[in-house]
Image (cartoon, rainbow, N blue to C red; front, top):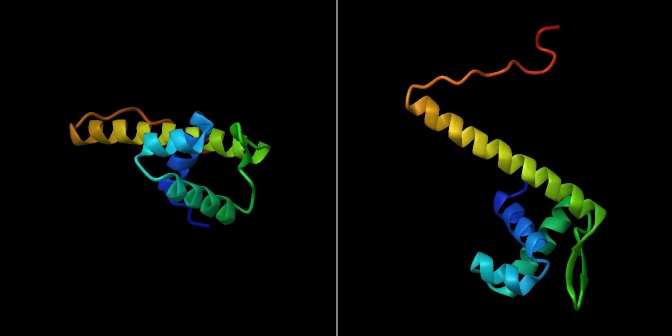
Length: 103
Protein backbone atom coordinates (compact mmCIF):
# COMPACT_ATOMS: atom_id res chain seq x y z
CA UNK A 1 0.00 0.00 0.00
CA UNK A 2 1.38 3.41 -0.99
CA UNK A 3 -0.40 6.23 0.86
CA UNK A 4 0.34 9.76 -0.29
CA UNK A 5 1.62 11.97 2.54
CA UNK A 6 -0.61 14.76 1.21
CA UNK A 7 -3.64 12.60 2.02
CA UNK A 8 -2.34 12.08 5.54
CA UNK A 9 -1.89 15.83 5.97
CA UNK A 10 -5.43 16.43 4.72
CA UNK A 11 -6.72 13.78 7.10
CA UNK A 12 -4.93 15.35 10.09
CA UNK A 13 -6.31 18.82 9.31
CA UNK A 14 -9.88 17.51 8.94
CA UNK A 15 -9.46 15.66 12.25
CA UNK A 16 -8.19 18.84 13.94
CA UNK A 17 -10.92 21.07 12.50
CA UNK A 18 -13.77 18.58 12.76
CA UNK A 19 -15.31 20.27 9.74
CA UNK A 20 -14.61 19.84 6.03
CA UNK A 21 -15.24 23.46 5.07
CA UNK A 22 -12.88 24.88 7.72
CA UNK A 23 -10.28 22.25 6.88
CA UNK A 24 -10.56 23.05 3.16
CA UNK A 25 -10.06 26.75 3.91
CA UNK A 26 -7.02 26.00 6.05
CA UNK A 27 -5.55 23.76 3.33
CA UNK A 28 -6.39 26.18 0.48
CA UNK A 29 -8.35 23.52 -1.42
CA UNK A 30 -12.02 23.32 -2.34
CA UNK A 31 -14.38 21.40 -0.09
CA UNK A 32 -15.35 18.94 -2.87
CA UNK A 33 -11.65 18.26 -3.55
CA UNK A 34 -11.01 17.61 0.14
CA UNK A 35 -14.05 15.33 0.39
CA UNK A 36 -12.76 13.33 -2.59
CA UNK A 37 -9.28 13.04 -1.06
CA UNK A 38 -10.62 11.82 2.31
CA UNK A 39 -12.81 9.24 0.55
CA UNK A 40 -9.75 8.13 -1.47
CA UNK A 41 -7.75 7.64 1.73
CA UNK A 42 -10.60 5.66 3.30
CA UNK A 43 -10.80 3.52 0.17
CA UNK A 44 -7.04 2.86 0.16
CA UNK A 45 -7.08 1.88 3.83
CA UNK A 46 -10.35 -0.05 3.60
CA UNK A 47 -11.90 1.63 6.65
CA UNK A 48 -14.10 4.59 7.55
CA UNK A 49 -12.02 7.24 9.26
CA UNK A 50 -14.81 9.69 10.10
CA UNK A 51 -18.41 9.67 11.18
CA UNK A 52 -20.05 12.38 9.12
CA UNK A 53 -22.97 14.42 10.45
CA UNK A 54 -24.47 17.87 10.00
CA UNK A 55 -22.49 18.90 13.08
CA UNK A 56 -19.17 17.94 11.49
CA UNK A 57 -16.69 15.11 11.29
CA UNK A 58 -15.84 12.82 14.22
CA UNK A 59 -13.05 10.27 14.15
CA UNK A 60 -13.92 6.58 14.21
CA UNK A 61 -11.74 4.19 16.22
CA UNK A 62 -9.74 3.53 13.04
CA UNK A 63 -9.44 7.29 12.51
CA UNK A 64 -8.09 7.77 16.05
CA UNK A 65 -5.52 5.04 15.44
CA UNK A 66 -4.45 6.58 12.13
CA UNK A 67 -4.18 10.04 13.72
CA UNK A 68 -1.82 8.67 16.39
CA UNK A 69 0.28 7.03 13.66
CA UNK A 70 0.33 10.24 11.60
CA UNK A 71 1.60 12.18 14.63
CA UNK A 72 4.37 9.60 15.12
CA UNK A 73 5.36 9.79 11.46
CA UNK A 74 5.44 13.60 11.56
CA UNK A 75 7.57 13.49 14.72
CA UNK A 76 10.00 11.10 13.02
CA UNK A 77 10.17 13.25 9.90
CA UNK A 78 10.88 16.37 11.96
CA UNK A 79 13.62 14.49 13.81
CA UNK A 80 15.06 13.33 10.51
CA UNK A 81 15.01 16.89 9.16
CA UNK A 82 16.80 18.22 12.23
CA UNK A 83 19.39 15.43 12.12
CA UNK A 84 19.97 16.01 8.42
CA UNK A 85 20.65 19.72 9.02
CA UNK A 86 23.20 18.67 11.63
CA UNK A 87 24.80 16.24 9.22
CA UNK A 88 25.06 18.92 6.55
CA UNK A 89 26.69 21.23 9.09
CA UNK A 90 29.15 18.51 10.08
CA UNK A 91 27.66 17.89 13.53
CA UNK A 92 27.31 14.25 14.49
CA UNK A 93 24.51 13.47 16.89
CA UNK A 94 24.70 10.28 18.90
CA UNK A 95 22.41 7.63 17.48
CA UNK A 96 21.13 4.85 19.70
CA UNK A 97 21.38 1.37 18.21
CA UNK A 98 18.10 -0.27 17.24
CA UNK A 99 16.31 -2.17 19.98
CA UNK A 100 17.67 -5.70 20.17
CA UNK A 101 20.85 -4.89 18.25
CA UNK A 102 23.05 -5.79 21.21
CA UNK A 103 21.58 -9.29 21.58
